[in-house]
Length: 445
Image (cartoon, rainbow, N blue to C red; front, side):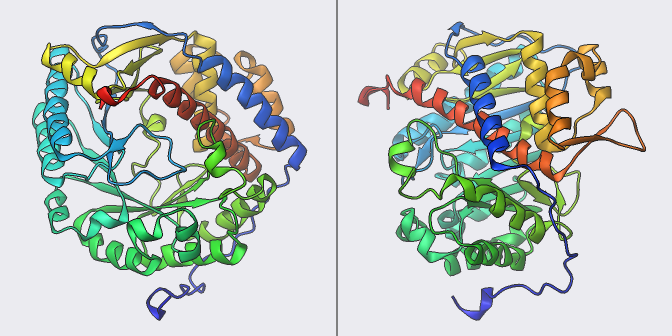
């Protein structure tokens, strides 16, 4: 690569040595425990549903909108997406705006909006209209987060999103051309140098730029990870997210053994990430880092207990119930045309299951609070989730905050375990998506 993106100077970065002492056998055991709970709680034993519930007064809600189109399909991606067709995509955006109106008619108001995909920026003009429509319907929206791939940054139309999107997350994955070639991204999205240049040019468009990186690729040496982190730091984005590569049932053949690193490398790679970014950035979650500690990021479920999803394949979590929208584009259009929302399934969770979910999020985000459990569930965290608390303390993942007894400190061991648990949870969600997509036929496009 050219000298433009050589390693950033280390002089201003505070040295940090991550104290991860969890042995591999304990990590493997935790993975098996998480897989058990994920399989138990993410089973598709849902019942049919025709509409969302009305909002509850006093609760805060986040709006999620899904754009299920991509120009190319990456082998390691398990999100709900179809190959882009402009006519279908334009019809979809129109229906999406109508579904937002239905949420408004139910009485919902939202403080934040997250747009995911797929590739959200396949049609920048339609995306801009959709964001403008959402802000008109829901004037309380204070921030809009969006995703894109590096290639779309070069489109002149991309500038239409300036002033509409507060946080743009760029799926870089790696700046290393060897990794990009192995994952079939080099020809699709350009070289690491091209991606760097595009992000640098796009920084002026949005208050927050987030650079998404992935670790856990086959052949991704310490030197490559260090180079990726240095290059990302050279860009000086407001946020950097470092996801572990996730292997699910549907990607196992295309990922495991082909582009995935041996499982045992994850701890050392994560230690390297903590050492490099801690000090330059504040840790927002186990895998997200930001310039300040109060800015929005990809895991919106941490900041919002309840969220409503619009669009094909989106999920909602309302009143301890998971709602699932149809994954068929054909059915989606039919439902909206009939004046019905896209939801077709629901699953109610018991209080204990919801508490375990919130415990997982607390570990992952480093925001585990006894006060939260008292206020939300009217329980004592230490007794209500005795097994979970005892096991985390035994593994050195949690310790009491000496300043505030209502707060718990998530240690480096806890961050490692939080990352592991969230990875297994997201892999379980991806398996659910795969099962819901499996019955789709060509006509469902």
